[in-house]
Image 1: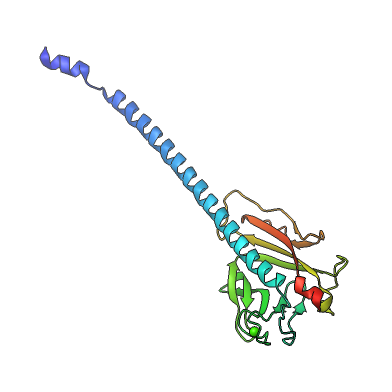
Image 2: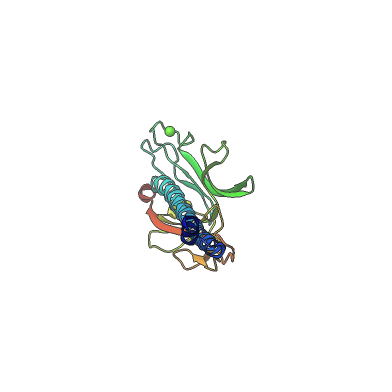
Length: 219
Ligand SMILES: [Ca+2]
């Protein structure tokens, strides 16, 4: 009688199987939720990295271009030396020694490719090689405006007429996002397309600003 009582209180094989299946379903559900959360965190991380690198790149561009032509002695010949739609070369005599060809004084910005990755390069001085400011940059676009705010044809034949520069950057995440397709067209402040549609799985960010070149008004 005692043994029989224990038997009736135990699990049948069917009950055990049902319990195992239920446990399996719950575990699979938890794992699936965990995976999707993990993917979501990774995507968030990619996006914040993209924002950080783009803001840093734009900060350098703004800082250097806004002080182009700084020439305290008036003898360094500083200014905007080359102004094309995707390349800019500026000089400034930061240490006021009458020479604007030194490191951090003669600066060229352009896109270049190394190890198969498109990068925004900052080259200084002119004889140096590109230093990467940001990776996975799809577009770097400059629009040069004269004193009346009219765009100058590029490459600008008379860079001394430049009073402000509209800078537009398009960058993407390093990793693709599953189930995402970037069909967007990216335009500069003039409404001209600078990139896209890429129709790929990378998320992108466009940053644009207009920089006043105060020293250029003194030319
Ligand atoms: Ca100098």
